[in-house]
Length: 638
Image (cartoon, rainbow, N blue to C red; front, top):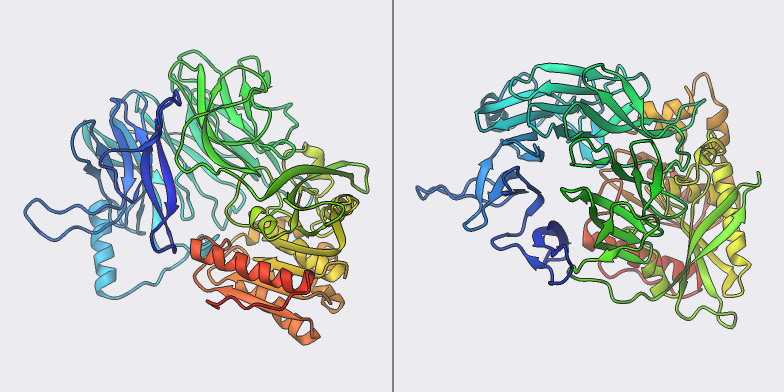
């Protein structure tokens, strides 16, 4: 079994990936794949068992010319011998997928508008470089997404077959993703065309003939988007995730569906499944004629593995933890994947493919975490409508009734998300190491608590979700080992918005940290890559102002008194810098103590390891100053 392992580089400012071999039995220690180098990632096996992977490693021309550029290419690693590059593309390859039983590979890579193949694309790139032009003309899409600028390149799907040249199967759309699948026999390729400015909430699934690129079927549904495509073993059906985003009048709804490629019929595979776990990619049994599938999804602070049988019966296979990267053995009897939890980083595990509520078998992996500076428990409360609420509570090692710990409340982003897995950003354990307890609440709009959790929060961004967080905080602070007089509130993205709501709604907290947070909801409409999404939720601000007036925290700025630390990335396209600048100017104008930690090269999340360390140091020093009364310590590198 081959895994891609990411680690911090020698400089401590970035990440590097290498390929590791993991013994499925767990008997032998994991080891680096022979001849793998830094920059190898995304391993997969071709139909003949050859290891394929993506890499930015350079390749020197045998004639002795200078090494070629380090764009990401597709490489093959024979069992004995050096890696060889089997596909390259100007600007790099974003992703690939292999046919299970044929010598065919689908690649995702870019083309410029007006270019038809790799050759014309390379010439167009060279022409732009010679003319020193980096401008982009946008016609149907936003200029950025999450943390990156878009265009002018557009992602396409290419098919490589041993019996002919590469075929361009079709465009994935201007803002498309690397969401591609191949039928097991390599005859069909499926990909998504992204939503456009004309239909911002609807994407299209395209199934094309791999040898020619000609379309065989297209599937779409107004107001819905499809992701994470997979073919059944006989290639007759395409299974994928279907997502209906929240609107002014409807809640989020995510399910798994199957498209019959002959009839075009679409079938909901989870019609009665009310866990609302936001099911992930379906992992289909590779056994011909076996319709069993597996998937993961949030459930009450966990993300278990579920099994769906032919009759629609759903069985939960794991009792705790958060699972990802599932794969199934060729006989359909065993699953492998990654398991993490709030108190456990990801580890490779083995599961029986049918046993309910089992404990995983941990397979040896490198660099396991040996200890944590505290313990994990749960807190329970009731919402103002009687709905049962829960949260994780991290307690530092020395918390007791004699030495109650200060508490930091940290709601998750999203809002459609849940605290269930290990995270590198906003991880609670650095806080615990400093002596803080951390409450990780799942309020209204969180996933894993049934559709009712969405209904009770719809249209109330700063209403019921915020009240749920406060109810859980009150329940936690009823414990003798927590100090109700020393509390703080911190959050990122939607959690940062709730931090802004706390700043304008109460003075009970000693300090507030607002990271990548919404402040002025009307201004957000024109400054985010998801303007159509937010307008669906809040309505047109010119004609339906009710939710803006109720939930835009900037309207209550005059109530702010609590010292605040703002954290924001300069390349954030989801919540633009304008939101942070507006919040900062309001705090300065009102005379509220404020500090602004700005990362010019980061996006909606802080990702560079050195920046994450700086963020933790700044946040913890800020809390120490305002919550514990210690002298302010400015980080040395700032």
